[in-house]
Image 1 (cartoon, rainbow, N blue to C red):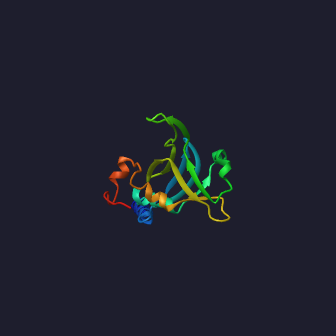
Image 2 (image 1 turned 60 degrees about the vertical axis):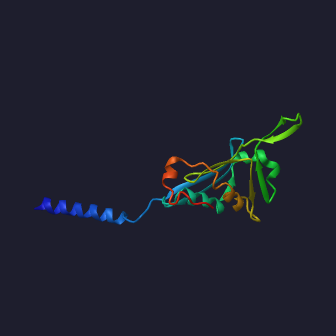
Image 3 (image 1 turned 90 degrees about the vertical axis):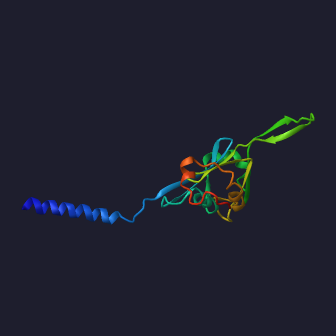
Length: 165
């Protein structure tokens, strides 16, 4: 009889512990980076409940504030500005008509975990007055929405795969 009461108590304890966790969702860390010439220069992070699809997570970029990574110092000439345009490396190339022209390489990468990766030639940021953090121009978020890369898993989990911004 003592064992039955002990067993019943353990079962009730386990059921109570399980009931306490039902409805609670673990937080998911969502990290974002900006790379120039394959070097991380800006970082940001947020979290969500893990239920947002890739399209919704991409939208987080409109509200994130990016901190300067230590490698941002390579862009020091830009550190005192309120607006920032990150560009990839430039190279000179001879065109078909024999003229020299400057070509920007596609070396600026915007990535947000669970939301995708976009490669571009430039990204525009602004810095709120008195802040040392940068905000991505919302037009940039919209501009790269359709052209970003997402994993097959992320694509499979889209709520509305035909949706456009």
